[in-house]
Image (tube, rainbow, N blue to C red; front, side):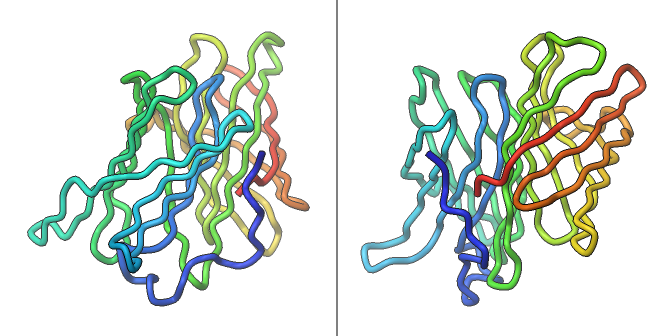
Length: 226
């Protein structure tokens, strides 16, 4: 099961400068990796707070709670909790009144895992991709490697199958040439780990490229799933 691939933004113009609207994201942990969509908006029955995730081919829909709303900090905080695949799952999204994302936090059995969220607007589509990576120096190593693009900004989440850790990457996407330049790697808390040199291309909703660190190198590839 996958999300329907949108070719135009799903967001409404009236939500562009509001905390309400549509947020999309990616997360990675080996064996638990996927894409998600958060919907926040007013309905005739009150405010709708919903988290929809697809991981390992299965769809999960979670109802959320607004745990804090403070004009002093101009921030809303939304929490989603459930048992998924016999694991305790928690997702927290904090956004400003104008829709600026303050933090994204995701936990699986109390372990922080990398997740990146962008808010979609009526004029800018957010694209999410699921993929994998390998290591040219060790054929037993594999990683879940997911990407998210909004405008010229690209981020990724990664998690290896062995004790090699997990984290985030960021860089620039050139839509005119459909190429990536990823230059920074972070730990799961967003602290810079290293400057890296990753390059890639996007074609027909698929991405591929190469990664290089001082210790090793390899390739990554995937497809758009949201």
